[in-house]
Length: 254
Image (tube, rainbow, N blue to C red; front, side, top):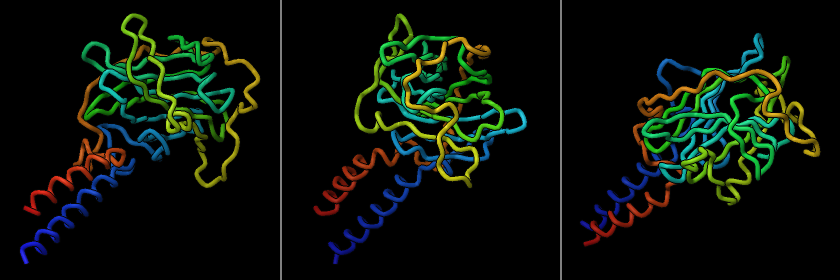
């Protein structure tokens, strides 16, 4: 009888923790003094995008959330005006500088050329970064061409930042990293379609100073944007939860 009671209690705990581990989606996240019309659970790297597109002034306001492999690592969200991959992308990269999170802009002309650039091929303003519970949040508003229906987005995480140059150290080349690209459609009712300027990638990446200058980057710290109450337990860490089950089961089995 005691064994059955222990087993039932174990199943109850297992169900609760698995449910919580899988419940962390963009809909469970909120922000102080900010709101967005849409949110997407990005399909790779445990990343999330909250966004609002304003067709009146052709701007995209966003919050991008992702966790670096290490606390000294970096996360990035980028627009690629010329293709669908990382090469040619214009990136917003968050990392910790000193003790504060910060976000900088980079032009990625190729995989061997990642250059800090205060000027991108589109206007960027309202840049800010937060870091809490092992996760970065990048806030920004980007200008897009009038009547744009979609854009090519790329997101990524990496292990470290070079202390001298401030350039992100190259990321892993696992499948999750290589597949972290997609098309962000502004009209949620429309079917998938190529993003603006998308082509076969034969043309060179845009100049890092084509149009506009972004505002000076700012860094802030704030409470975690999650309201699920299970910070630190994410679906990507389900293995840790399973390990905890085994530990609890061992106690109840004694």
